[in-house]
Image 1 (tube, rainbow, N blue to C red):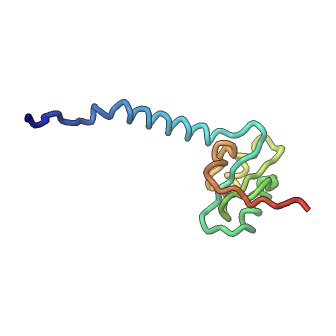
Image 2: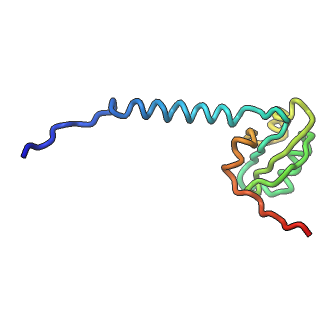
Length: 114
């Protein structure tokens, strides 16, 4: 019985690594592209309470559509075409496309209709 002498090198994984890098960069760019309907997933500093998040949205001229999965994350909307820029100016840490990042946060609890 002969011993295997095959060795594994980084070249064996270069195709998979290139695919991983391309998909990560592509999804990241897509997530940071503003949505066409002026809605945004707004992330503020971790530890920010909800009142401060509301102040950021209000200062940018927006309204909260729904809460995110965490106290510092909300989905907001505004009729202003420069809403994303205004959110950053008001203190948002990250403004992302809510459709792409919607799966990254837990859904808010559903409320049964009366």
